Length: 114
Image 1 (cartoon, one colour):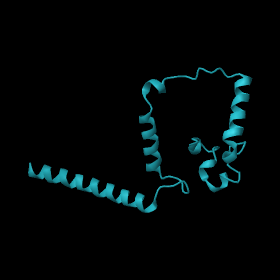
Image 2 (cartoon, helix red, strand yellow; image 1 turned 180 degrees about the horizontal axis):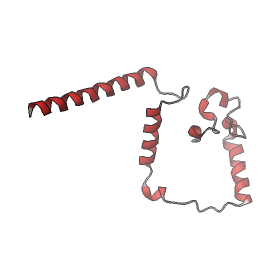
Image 3 (tube, one colour; image 1 turned 135 degrees about the horizontal axis):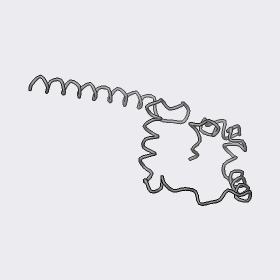
Image 4 (cartoon, one colour; image 1 turned 90 degrees about the vertical axis):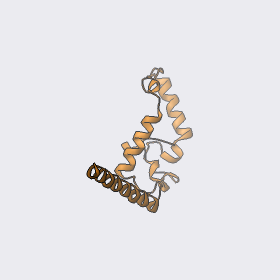
């Protein structure tokens, strides 16, 4: 019984030390948009995002029919509200977008606009 308790305690201690080292690294590196997130950080963010959306909303479908008028309205909205940072083609090649790597919305990992 003591041996099992010792093994479990040692394993738990290793997990705690690993978490502390990772937290220390994250705090030292900081959080920002200048560098691409690591694989653990990206995975954690995607998991947390998925957990934050209630299942009834995940199952919903878009009720707006895709028509030329709707597409034109969306393009006009993009031009008014998004193109300043993201550019008309989503490349982020604008005066404001060049300062922030998140402005490039053409890469799959950068498609969310805050």
